[in-house]
Length: 329
Image 1 (tube, rainbow, N blue to C red):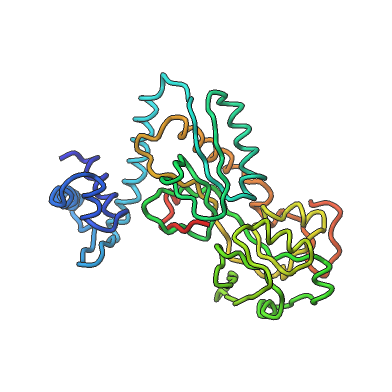
Image 2 (tube, rainbow, N blue to C red; image 1 turned 120 degrees about the vertical axis):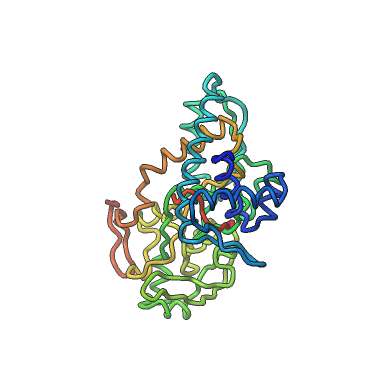
């Protein structure tokens, strides 16, 4: 029995959470899938999966096997691709999706540097804060930003953290008052992102975590709309630091409730499969990984010298290999 193939089949069963779906994705029979997993369990001398009529879950031994199998399969696929593409220079076109604010202010400089290194690659960047579907939009790769990703049909590589912060203008806080606790937010005009917190729930880290239901006069699926509203004094907004770091440094916005830590987001590079990934797309993915290995200041909020509400703003600002679940924001 091909050991590498058994590991591939086992990993697909876990990813699909079903022998039937795994067989369909691998274009083999369910019996073949069962045979490969059974051989692997016999070889390991341990049960790797709990099976029921409704779901398939990992045993403790299965989790250890899966972690090692994913690493081995990824290394093998990378070796296979490197050998196959070693004589070819990356060229052709790439379609990349991203949320508007992140795409404009942070992805664009990365794409520009990538183009300098690979002048024979043409990149199309599509910006959308909604549900950019890789297949229907013909995307090779998409940047998604969310607390967690919940679509197991895609592979999501976590690039870096995106801490969030509550912000408001000095004019709004002078008019409406400065909230002192999370519950005080219920008495304020809160600007709600309809995709990231559609029902108006803002969550904060802690022991235990805290969740507050908020309401306001402005809602939008585009973060820039909410930031502009906050700058105009409309209310309190919840944003990733990457969207408001410049405004915090300049004093145009102030941190609200600096003692609270809002639920953080993760920035993922999402793609459909590593198998037969074009060398040009792999080059971009590796470029993004290198960029993420040296996070900018906004990914490390403790390094930001941002003014908090009630204080004068400073003159100058000082693998998981695969996400388990996928929601697009």
